[in-house]
Length: 313
Ligand SMILES: Nc1ncnc2c1ncn2[C@@H]1O[C@H](COP(=O)(O)OP(=O)(O)OP(=O)(O)O)[C@@H](O)[C@H]1O
Ligand SMILES: [Mg+2]
Image (tube, rainbow, N blue to C red; front, side, top):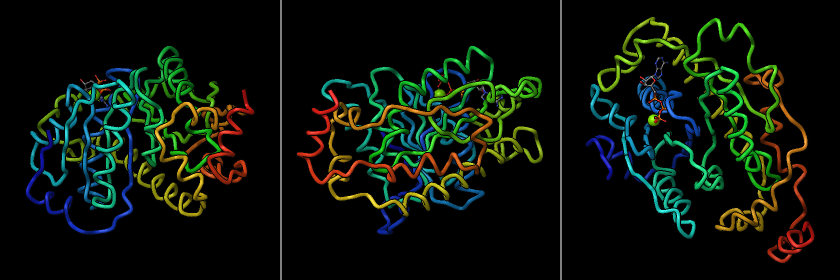
């Protein structure tokens, strides 16, 4: 079911041509703050960055969309839907259709999703930024590392434009950060590290009432603002980089198919690994992750794609 405020019905259906910034907030772990970030980030984009914004809530609990709808009024459009048909790639197709309906109609689309193994990583190609909130304890970081490994072929793909991965330390304490938890780890893909979101009990109290930015100068307000600004910057850089990448027509057709197995064959196996210290926000790993087209195989059509698939067996 979709919920629209009057103002935003106009925005959604206005005949404008906007290069929608598509942000996926996702992790396989419950309770890390995805919905809290999604709700507050959508209001930040709407009210601090003055962007027409849609929050697409794919979480069965619907907490981010409920928060935005039931707190004070805002101009964020919310849509909550539960996609649970995993047969015959229906989930990927349904999800892709939900996202694409908003393209070029709003400036920012934020999607809140809890990942399960039944989901198809190919959906990540629908997004510019993939934000993964994670706690920073050793156990949680190991779980995040494993989650990223299950989807890393998307970020390491040599075909087309991969999304940019942003890791967001979430619900952290100063003491945890002092141990520099990211630099000691290896990740199988390049990523940017967002400014941390601190654990702050006041955030819990705001649910369905207010947004973190409504409480001026609070620790939560500052950390969510810094994080949101960095996400916006990452979006700008990603869009610039993506515009510079020329995707050949044959590759575009390939990317638009629903053939995941083919995509996996085409994706290059991760060769290098990246650690947090190597990949702070704004540093070169970002561009490495988005200039994947440079080393792309020279494919001129479906027959060459098939040849390369068969040849790689
Ligand atoms: N920065 C924060 N400081 C303190 N508590 C927080 C913070 N962010 C979220 N929480 C609290 O943590 C709990 C889980 O947050 P949230 O629902 O956003 O996580 P989630 O990743 O969306 O979980 P789920 O996977 O169950 O949907 C909530 O009670 C929320 O109020
Ligand atoms: Mg949630």
